[in-house]
Image 1 (cartoon, rainbow, N blue to C red):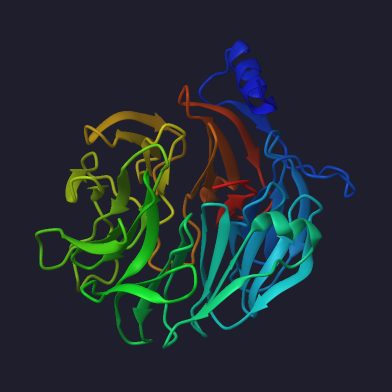
Image 2 (cartoon, rainbow, N blue to C red):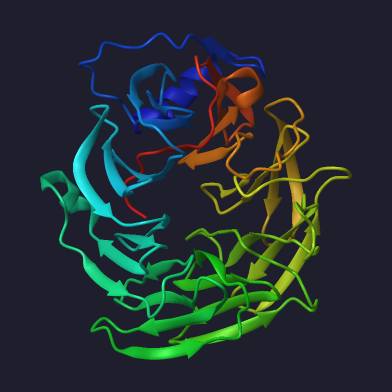
Length: 385
C-alpha cells in the first residue's frame, strides 16, 4: 500500500469530523524538500504546500497574474508568467532557468507521457517528455500554427498531434498531424473552439459554441448540441471513462453567464447529455475535474462538491466543503478552485484563506489549513498522465 493510502486509512481511524484537522500555515524549514507538493497562487507569488500536511513549505515571490499546471513529473510545475512558461521546482521551492519564452502562455496539457505547451501570442507548440526535466530543459517536438490564437494542442500515444485552428479574431476548428508533422485531417466546423479533454480510448474532444469536436479513429467528428448556441469551453477527461465532463453555457450575450447545467459527452455514441445542477447552484471553469474512478466532480456555488456518475448522468453525492460563494465578474479574481490528485481533492476557500483536503472515497474533509494570503489557483506535481 502506498503512503497516500496509509495516510487516508490513518485519518479514517481517528474518526475525523466533517471539518477535519485544522493545521497552521507555519512554514517548514527552508531546506526541506516538499512531499507531493501543491502550488497555490496569490497576488504577489506562489505558495508551495506539503501535500500531506498542507503546511506552507516555501513562498516564491512573483509579480503579475500567474497560472500553475502540473509539469508531468513528481516534482515540477509549469508557471504561466508575463514572459512565457517557466518551470517551478516545487520540491525545492524555487523557480528554475528552464523557460519557454513567448507572449500569452496558455494551455498546458498532459497526455500519454507528454506535456504540451501552447503559447497564444506566438502560436508555438512545445511537446516534451517530462521525465527529461530531471536533467534540464527537455528536447521538445515543436510546431507553429499558421496564425497566433488562444488555442490548445494535445499529442496522442501514437504521435498524432491535434492542434486548434484560428486567428486572434476567430477560432474555427482543429487539424491533426501525424508523428512526422504531416497534416492528416482537418475540421473547421467548431466555432469558438476552446479547451480539450481526452477520454478512454484516446478520444480527444475540443469544445465548440454549438457542441464538441471529437477526434477518434484518425478522423474528426462534429457532435452538435441541438442548440444554436451552447458553449462547451471547459472539459475534463478520464482514462477510466469514455464519457467526458464539460460545462454548458447558453447565453451568447451575457456579460458573465453563471451556468446551471453541465454536459456529459459520450465519445462512443457521439451524444451530449445536459444535466442540471441542484436548484440555484452554478459553478465556474475552476470547478470541473474527475475522480479516480472516472466520476465527474463539480464544485458548486452552494459550497458542495457534487459527484456525478457519467454512465447514468445522475448526481450521486453532494459533499459540503466550503461556504456558499458567488463567481466574481473578473475571471482572474479568486474563487473556490478544485485540484484532484489520486483519491484526494484539494479545494481553496478564498473568503477564509483556507485550503481543504477531501478524501474522495469517503467524502470527508481530512485536513484544512489557513494561509496568510488569499488563494487563487491551485495545482501541484502529478507524475504520469
